[in-house]
Image (tube, rainbow, N blue to C red; front, top):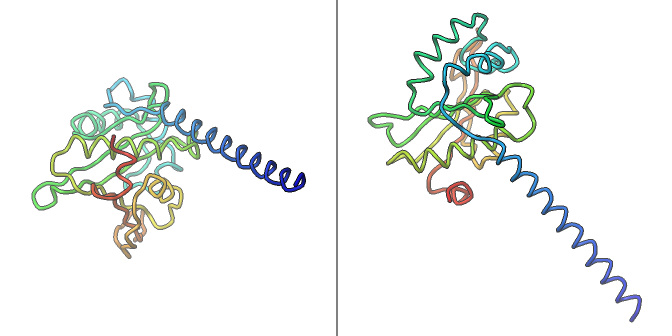
Length: 206
């Protein structure tokens, strides 16, 4: 009887330790997500924007080339970023470390929006992009009437961005072969989507 009792006790201890570890990991992730906020850009964010917009590692899979002239970037911010209805700064402690946008469809495409995002290399691999995507999807579904689908197109070689979307609950739908010419190459793109009726939407929308 004593041996059996000790076996159960050890098993119970391991289970409790496992539960405590899972709780610590969950709390750490929640704290990390709370550090990230989304807000509209301002021209005063120009220097922060230049950090990632001039980095070839960041723009390698983007449709646009790295910026080398700060005035060109200022013009882009003034003419494109600031007027955009859903272009947000990904902020850590209130300071921009990346950008995220949702291009909302019109006419027959008014039921969907296309998501795009970039993050400064110093903050890669910390879950910040995933946290920002979750926040954006939650907000855009709440704010935009009639929106049913958020989709994202990712270069087939951009594994990091694909992981971000998968962790955020997006569904990989398939590969669009030879779908876009970018930086002198015809590229295959992976289509991801998040639908307002997806079961996982409950984890994003309160």
